[in-house]
Image 1 (cartoon, rainbow, N blue to C red):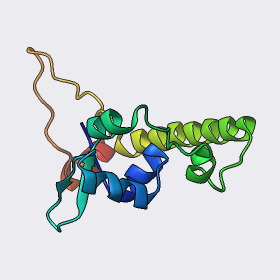
Image 2: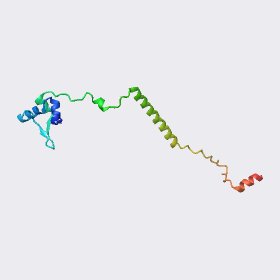
Image 3: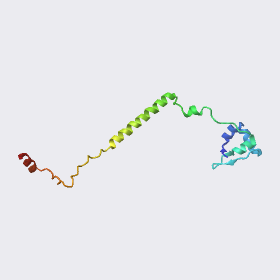
Length: 130
């Protein structure tokens, strides 16, 4: 089980520090020492000596943890939808940037045709004379 400091033991048991020190001196509750020599109490030992432990959960923890985030759900959902739309637009933009159209197909000469030679100035002038 978990180990607790003296301050935590006071909160869990509802006893005073003085009462817990007195019980340690009388041997009614056992303890261990941490690396710094501070007294530590195991949960099961506190339960054995003092019975059921008090709940130390803080009821206002969610408010403290989310301080400043008092947005209504409609606003949060609208913001989430706007972010999703922006992500879709960015993906489309990336696809357009990455899109490389295929080069147009090159017409292959038929087997019985002689391939055309590239045009030169002399061939162009001779074609004009004809």
